[in-house]
Image 1 (tube, helix red, strand yellow):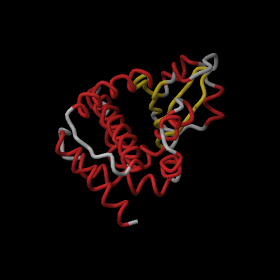
Image 2 (image 1 turned 90 degrees about the vertical axis):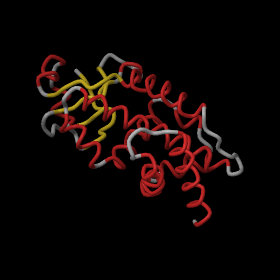
Image 3 (image 1 turned 135 degrees about the horizontal axis):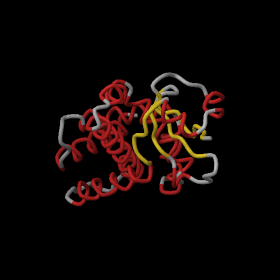
Length: 193
């Protein structure tokens, strides 16, 4: 038996946890071939789950891969620290963007183009849901300032700022210049609000 911990896109793209698992270490991102409700999922045994969808990746493995890539990217950039809220928010939004990009690359490389398309089509909402999952299940809230946490917990604000960061980072390979431009754009939007 498994349960949905967080629906990332309807009840198709979800984070699942085994009934005996007590923490997020064993959570997986899973794609159901059809919309399925939580009650139906709770009645399905693990073998039947695999007949109704496809395991994408363990969340733990995804996060480890993103941390490695994120570290390589941010090693070379120079961001000013004059606005700590922007600095803190940008770091978090960059991490979420990198996680979704990695997830999209994984599903695309496995030939699961429908899922890659869903992620591209509804990226901001999936980013918000994944962010909320990380905050609640992986304690990512501990690294965020209260003001930043208020922003990322407000879906409309999260999406507004995520779109700003995403605009600069959706041009193919992400490099130092893209990150610095995205940071400056986010900083400018804070001045205007």
